[in-house]
Image (tube, rainbow, N blue to C red):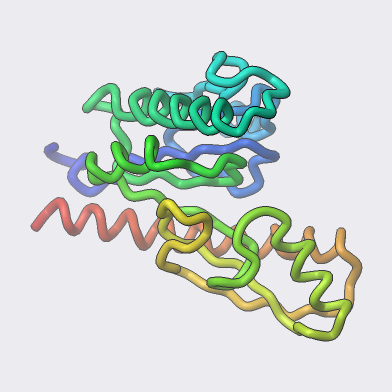
Length: 215
């Protein structure tokens, strides 16, 4: 890597949802065909080497409505392995940093193992403080605690991704006080506050990657 490329970090964002956290991303795989993040990429006029729809069910890794737990687990592992291989398939476009920008799929070791061996870092944004409300419905669960008088604050964090959902080492944390609003208002405010940590974290980790590359 020579010239200006030495000071650049190849970043890939993975999104499933509306795309409000999708900022200045080089590549965008998605597991939902109608994700609004694709629209945001088009509006930004960005050409992407990997803007891709790759879905667990549509790509036949798992039958829709499958309830057998073993089949579900095997299907998800096959999907994860295939997705990792897809991301790592070319050296030229291989990312150095992956950002999960609203990615609604918990990765297994079948994805995380190859990505880790390739020395690609993965970060995620989660609407809760470390070790509080891991997993889905974090805002809703915090809201129930607010209403019960057991909690007065929550937060958002950007963290490294490991094989335990939302348990990776935090990188940027922001506490958010409850202002007595209803759930939908709280959700809107929480999602607004997600933007700053994900941008700060992306810049911080990308800079570390560039510096590590130069040593």
